[in-house]
Image 1: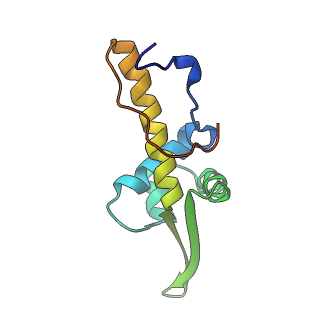
Image 2: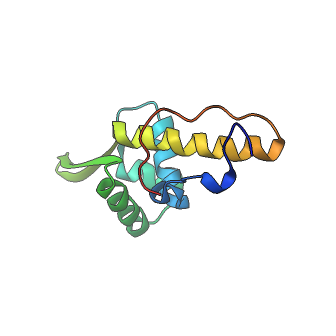
Image 3: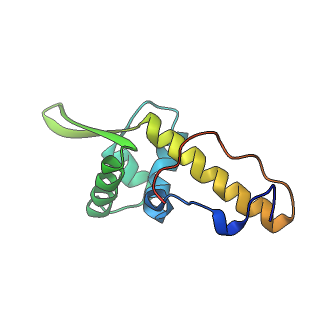
Length: 120
């Protein structure tokens, strides 16, 4: 037990915990852009179009991404943006992972963010 918490008390967000969705949120959070195109995400992460579509739908249903469909040069274009809720959920998830790592190293992890938990 570290900092008054135990590993048994972790509340890893099940939406984010799936590898593909974690990769998508990480990609969006680290891109430095307000939004990313579907093709850029697909190519950047090496996903198939079908898998990316399914994972984005799950993230959108959780409120973690906004998806906007439009046309560019008469071609369909899908833009994906990380929402505030998605950014907050990712930060909480990463704080839980930091707690796990600190517990394994015997250190004292950073305190939990003072935000309500989602998922679980």
